[in-house]
Length: 176
Image 1 (cartoon, rainbow, N blue to C red):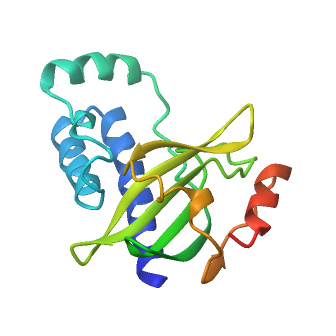
Image 2 (cartoon, one colour):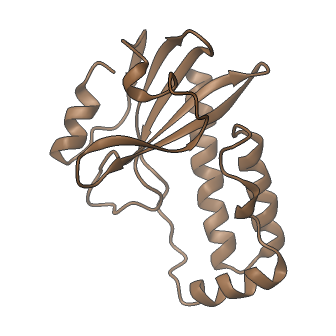
């Protein structure tokens, strides 16, 4: 579980640096950092279109020109470990959205991590649908057995940060 926590914290740190490099208009650093994210992602997750060519970077930079350089990293709430028939051990990492409001700690996204060719990779991404408060698959592996509701009972759960809103707290306290 320690290695999984390190991977997700690395992802969160690189994601923050990507945004700062974008706000600082540093195309080279931005693309290097995107490559680092791609290294820890499954083949279909976080596609390379996140990288910028010089022309598209100019458009993006104009949007971000007056943006605040302060970026708040995601919150990591908990990691749940499961035994999966196809992937072996799978971990569900419950996090906030990127650049969260510091006053409200909400679970908004969940990344599934699995070992692919003996390397830990983020293989799937889920978000909370705002209206139904249900998990919705948005990116990554299309295998239907690799959905939060199909993972079964966790082998182990580690909790790190207690959310502050009611629905998130319920999710946080669930044995899943």
